[in-house]
Image (cartoon, rainbow, N blue to C red; front, side, top):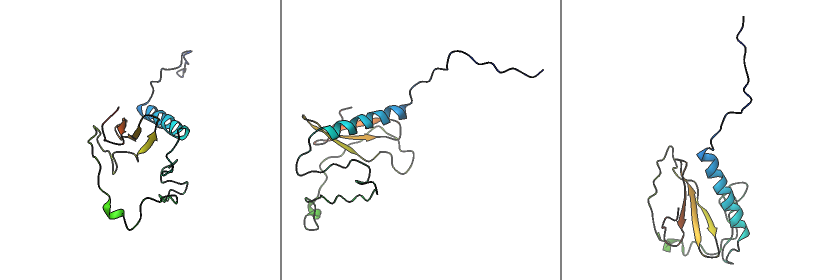
Length: 125
C-alpha cells in the first residue's frame, strides 16, 4: 500500500530573514530620503549608479571639475564588523538627509545594516 501524504492544518512557522530585514530597512531609508528636502547644491541618486542605465554620471554635478578634483581628501574612515564574502563586502552607500543630520547607510554581506554620521563616520547603529 502506498504511503499517504498528510497535510497539517497549521502552516509552518517562518522566521524573518536577515536579508529581508535589510531590504526593508533600505526601502524605508530611500522613502524617507525622498521625502526630505535636499540642499540646493546637491542632487539625489535615487537608484544605484545614479540613473536607470547605471551610468554613474550625475549630469547635475557642478562641484567637481578637472581643476579641483586633485584637492579631494579623505574626511574620515571607519572599520565595520563585517566579513566580505566576495569582491565587495559592503553595498554602495545610501545618503539620507534628515532635519537634524545626514547619515550614510550601508548593508554588509554578513546581513548587517550600518548607519554612520556623514560628517564624522561615527557609527549610529
